Length: 218
Image (cartoon, rainbow, N blue to C red; front, side, top):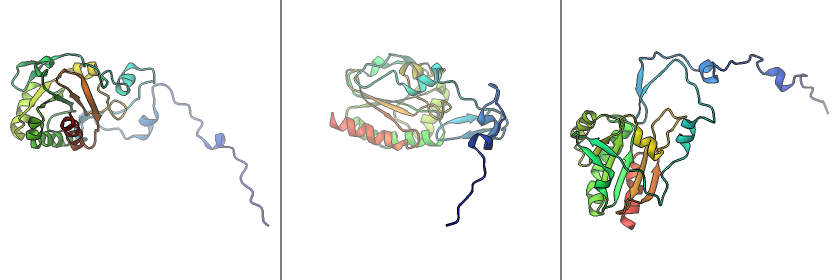
């Protein structure tokens, strides 16, 4: 039987010997440079691209915050006071006494977020029948929320978390190495205790399905 002779190369000899400095990443070598001014929409995010992308070290608090939620099932989330689409201050305590659906979404007027908001709108009577309130939160300002709510006839409250303080306080995880604000829904019972946490960035309608299942079982 004929034998097969392989070239006398070892794996290390086949790999490039160039050493990358800390200022460079694999991403910056492989990705094309895109103008800082270019923008696109990706599943509910208005993205501004920079010429290089770097990933924080594993010890970075931002990475930890994007993985480990601070609010868990069975806990009472941190309180807050934010402005609604009419510029009025609204506190979380206002919703106590009824089940409340608090959903965090990336941004107004983006495809995934519009789809999600309209799905909540279309099922709003079911939420009312279950005795529940719906509250949407993003980093957009009140005027953006007002235009968004008016355009799509949204019957529920939208709150402006400018600076994403509440998002951070609740530990809402991000996606894609922290570049995409997370899409996460919390269901609080009438006592303000979390009964469900649901995260799904790319199937916004599932948030409505999952929350209704729980509410209808209470």
